Every structure is written in C-alpha cells, then in structure tokens.
Image (cartoon, rainbow, N blue to C red; front, side):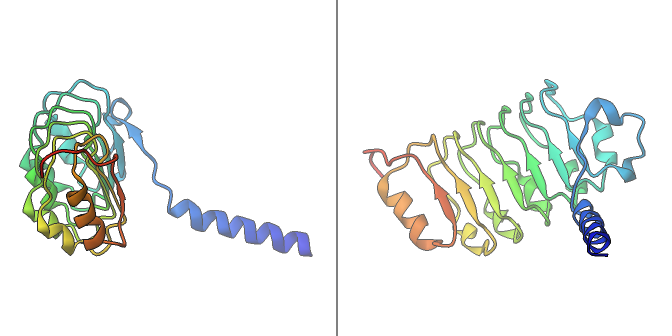
Amino acid sequence: MKLLLAITFLYTSSLLFAQDTLRIYKWEAIQKANPDTILGIDASKLKWEKIPEKLYSFKNLKYLNLSKNKLKELPLEMGVFKSLKTLDVTKNDLDSAPIVICQLPKLQKLHLARNRISSLPACIGYLTDLKVLDIWDNPINTLPEEILKLKKLEAVDMRSIMLGPHFQQKWEESMPQVKWYFDPPCHCVE
C-alpha cells in the first residue's frame, strides 16, 4: 500500500512539474509547425542579419534565443511577443538597446551581453517583471534611474565593463536586493 501511495505521489508530482517545463525548438524544426503551438524557439547561430518575417507568426512565444547572429537591430515588429519571458540577443551587432524591449511586458530575463550597447532606454522601467538583466561586455557607463522601478529585479551582470567604484557603490546601495556582478572597479575618472 505504501509503495502504491509513493508511486501515485511521484506520478502526480511529475505531472505538476512537467507543466512548468518549456520545450525549446530549433528554428529549422518548426518551419511547418502550427505557430500557436510553439512557445520556445532557439534561433541562435544562424548568421541572421535581419529577422525573418515568419518569426512574427509565433506570437505565443515565452522564450526566444537570437544569440550569436549578426543582428544590428531588433525591429518594432517584435512587439507582437507579448508573452515573452526570456529574450537572448547575446553576441550580435547591436549598437543600442532595442527600444522594442519596452513593449514586452512579461519579460523576466533579458540577455544583451557582448554587443556594442552604450546605454539602456529609460522605458526599461516598464518591465516590472524583469528579474535578470545581462549586459556584460558592453560599453555601458550609465544606467537610467528608471531601473529603480524594477522591484522584482534579482541580478544585473555588468562584468567586463570598465566602471569606477562610485558607480558600483551607488547601484549596490540603491538596490541592495539585487545581486550586482561587477569586475573590480577601475581607477578611472568618473
């Protein structure tokens, strides 16, 4: 009887946890799929310079990986992804933080690392569900004050960025609930 109860508990538990699992499909594998059934896409390492129009038909996405492409911008059409929770555009050719991110209200994880972004838009304060902001190895030397509105923010990665001690101290003190990842401060003029 105890064995039967244990098996029933394990089976029920696995069903509950399975609902939280998100299946991520490679771009090549979903070309003939019904866009309404796909919630996660990995379109990394495809050498895209521009996002294909077909991507916008997957409006229910919760996860989108566009890392390691050659994107110079993220178009406003990406605003269709209202359910998107994770966006990874690491290692592209972005010169500025895409303003379209502010149209993604459910975003929880934003990976902008290894681009050439020098600043973040003030509208980032609208991303009230944001938990992780990864901007390491970008030439950012300032953050918008609107980041203070992000009450759910848990971690910000700013490693590989030359930042002085006053900058680091200001943000660590302003948002002590956030785990800040900095390299040792530089001895540079602030």
